[in-house]
Length: 365
Image 1 (tube, rainbow, N blue to C red):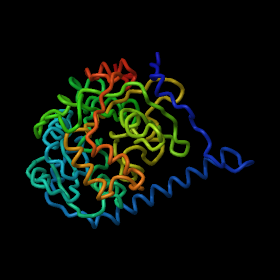
Image 2 (cartoon, one colour):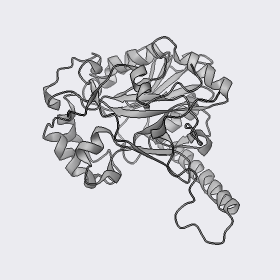
Image 3 (cartoon, helix red, strand yellow):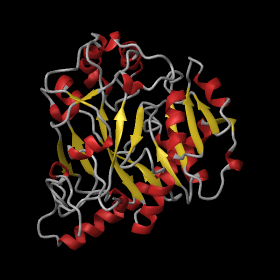
Image 4 (cartoon, helix red, strand yellow):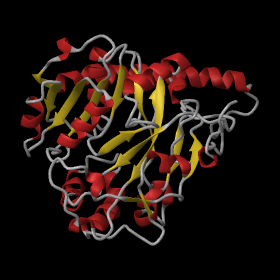
């Protein structure tokens, strides 16, 4: 019996033809043209990563200790000394055995903290986060060099990765099952978590579990469609769409990600981890209503420090391709808002998320 995909995750426009497709051109020809263009795009992204490697300086290169079959973690970070102890602890609990981390000019002790970790290989750079495709050029090089043949989990420091049975089944169990299914990628919904009360009023000590404070999320205001060229989902919604982009919902952040991939040196993320090439890796959902095992990234952006950090991000203009369009978003965060409302839902674990259709066990019972 084939399980069913939660209805809210059914693609609205599966395999739609690109807008402006030439009339009279057979669909098979259009597909060949698109496939050729995507191959060239992937090669250009790999070439970018090759060039950007010169921006990286190795601080602690312990990659010689990576064992065959080890699951790797990858991240680009900046000023995350308070988050990293919990982030690393959670990833280790899941079964990540080695970390490939780029520090983008931190000033808060992040570099020193990471350099002291025996399972972390650390590179630093003063290069532009935005001009490195938001860190993806740097990580693409490191994954190609050190992640080939390994399952690799690529996250931001404010993302907590969970999946069905994560408390009792580690990533090795999940990836072994994915291997048997012939799957090389695993999708997740990014779920924005937030506190009750103003953002700046919450108290979280460095290294503490942020979910002790960020207990709430928006459960039902999500929209989804399929990107026609690469076949990846495009999901928007959640508290940021409700609170900051209600008048322009198309500007709301993208919430679908593909964080876990059996890496090959020919692969390349396209836009953060929202999409990847080759496009077959984007098929992390059911195309005809069938269910597919998926996870959730509990997004802990809205810790108290987000108010001060928003000042910096607005000034640096490194987090959006067209940053000036998001000044109102930063201004709203700087105002220290309250995100909780009467429709907010309290987080009660992965089974609760599954019951709400936000993640799925699929065939991995």
